[in-house]
Image 1 (cartoon, helix red, strand yellow):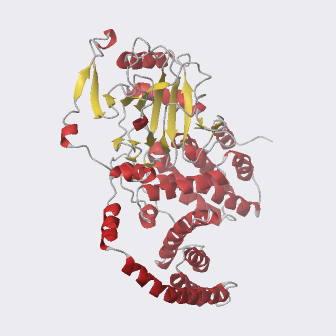
Image 2 (cartoon, one colour):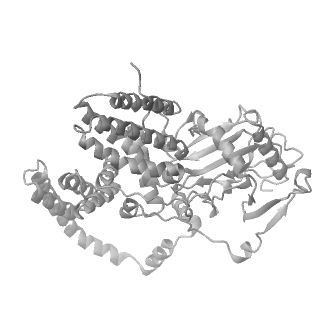
Image 3 (cartoon, helix red, strand yellow):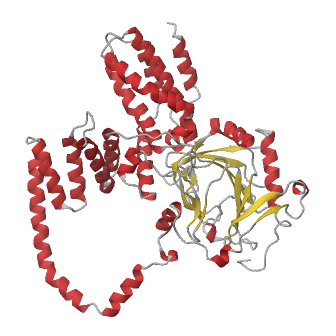
Length: 549
């Protein structure tokens, strides 16, 4: 049987997609899904024209998606830079297109069904949908966003590139709540079920019924120990559905538990008063002092999130006055004499510098073009087994480029050597990374610690002495590189690179370089980095005489 022309177009588009490739971990690669969805809509519309009298419901579905895909493909990366758009794209392809397939199968089959059935093997799966949903929850926590802000798509944006807002339906909010519920995360279950209920109460048209939402919501609140609120929602559930199988029994149970809590509180009251009497004024003062924690005493996770939000510590004016910007030729390096680079101090301890206009737009596009077909889910080295594995705290895809892939890579390597003065022949290949929905890399060290004696052993080039990091895109919101131990935050700026030493001149690790990539809130983050190793630097960076030198 001969396939129609539009079928061939769809199949050729899908050849670039792997059977399953962790789509949610790379926004750049997800653009292929947009084109796939656009082609699916085109195929669907052709089918509708042939069966219009029988398939009026399907026609309405196609028209709804048609305008979305036309808008989205005008600026795919900008569209997918909005995390709600990315989540909804994954959700549509994983769930809603499957529902549509069942609907069409109840009618006459045709070319569209054949195409859709074949192409489903290239669609995101449940893991992708769950990953995209958890990314939204992660962004909610890191950037302290309420559910309504995310649902309405009004995310804080510092740049103008992402102009396409997207609203979440009550079903979308319910889906997030269910995913949190499946992880026994009752706090986020409550937030998202409450948002779904709010939208239904406001009159949003939906196939979702309030009873189902309230059932989840009351249970999530109960699990957090708030019996009275759980009872209120259960009473509302019974009002809506008096025959609900769990409603009345849950209400009796909550009433019993609430009575039990009240009795326990009454028995505890005299003991509590006695404890309060014993507590001296001095202890109270100590408690107050303890609550005013210095930044250095705040848990790392909290510091990391504060820095991602642009909070955290600020440099003193005296330290700030010692940071400069300059034209830099690295001690009259021949390659920089006529065109010195712009160097800007970002932080003093550890010393972090930024180089401006150090990579061109054309070079960036070529690197992305070379890397995109090779992008694979980024891995971490298991500190116990040494085996490379994926991790929930590193959400990105990466690819490695060598000078044999393109002469331009060799030029970039030479540029890094010229600016840093370090030997790059013993460095690792250029790693290109694209972050996914809410993409991040939680706090980590680039160098191998003393408890990791076999780190980089197979390379035979020693430890990672320094890190060079290119920013290959601007990011509308989020995506900073932060150093939680010292309170430093470096924000992405396209065409720039940051550089720091991971080791002191003595070869000892500088633990203040522990750093993290903040979740991308809005936008598309591309970076590339070069890890420079110890071997070959003997005369370029002589060993110091003390550990911290």
